[in-house]
Image (cartoon, rainbow over all chains, first blue to last red; front, side, top):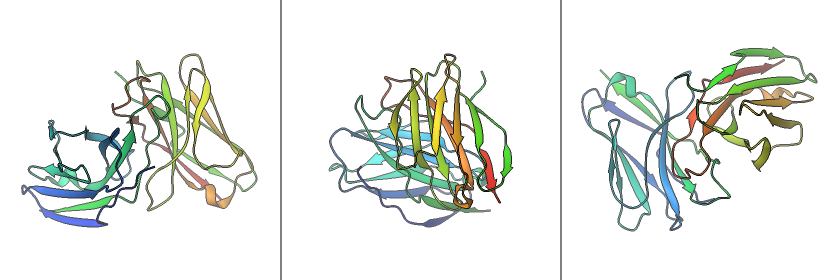
Length: 113
Length: 114
């Protein structure tokens, strides 16, 4: 399984943008880049995913490098409720691996008021 | 529409005992995956069930077993509990065939082994 590398922790001020980086230099052509976050005392929740192009949804944006060896999750205006552990995960595309998510340590995001 | 539900919320067991945890997937989902999350760590994949069979398995001993029922709900059984089995056990559901789509996680069952 391809590996991802994320900073252990980051801090942000409320209502400012946050850029959470992820390195995945061994990514294969069929790996999707997924981001999940885990709020305190909750199960992980899906944030966003992408393959090659940048993606936007109501929660965040995902910027993917042209060589796909890195990506950045962008929270446009951080709120206190965005304080969580953010996981960058590579998910194989194929019939043999539809469910398995390999979580790393993730990045703990602190949001200061 | 109910999301993924898990029971019980918390559980305390003694070393050597056996435990059963339960999960009901999100409506419309047919695949259930189980994860173990130790304190301060990311979740680790235990196994996945689809069509009432174990389809994928992570690096967990045979003491960990599971079952999926015709209504897609699932159980996780752990035999001969060890202190190291203390963790948050998470269930996630998804719809098979949507390889790139998200998984929905339940709130977890906190298991404490004393």
